[in-house]
Length: 276
Ligand SMILES: N[C@H](CCC[C@H](N)C(=O)O)C(=O)O
Image (cartoon, rainbow, N blue to C red; front, top):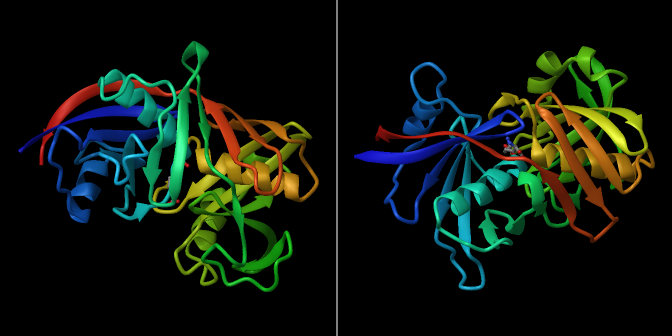
């Protein structure tokens, strides 16, 4: 069976996006991994599957799969590509679209100049609402990683993030510490590992070793989690420019109970079809 797809990216975090509204799509985890393979398949960090909503109050549902085949709760860069996709594919002509994810409804909105703003919902914190074996509800937790003890702030944007502050992202041990944090025993559902350099109270640099995908050029929920972690640590103001390896995201959070708003680009590279 042939399957139509779009190949897209948000600041270099790349996706295969599939219309599951007008196509019947059944993909096993093995087939997902093959499609995500950058030599044997199309290649992607995540695959996004667009479906009809479960509730009539919403416009769509979208499912998110890492390239290791794991299905996850949320994807920030993916949300921007999602809204560009449904608009380009004429699946919707709305500017603000209500989309169901595995962890709540988000509202991406087409803005001026090709930028897209997404209400990513309110962050949640350890120990209550994140699969993290915490000791108390402090803002930072010590975590033994290899022979080092690091201080992390744990934030959920629907998906779990462990964020640490580093002096320089370019020399941060992302490749060595990243997988150790991702698979740390205190995160029974694994975790995304953020490495944040504070440039100023409204500017950071960020690298993220993503759960189920490794280091990516950018991570939207990681940028949201890092800004929330920095604000909770008293290091950042409410509007922050986040420099990722793939480009810039604007993140805003007005504090507890408030949603995180993310603004950034989305690009369609090509469309195609593939035998599945
Ligand atoms: N790897 C993440 C999902 C993709 C998130 C990222 N690509 C983003 O833009 O938020 C996880 O397992 O929770």
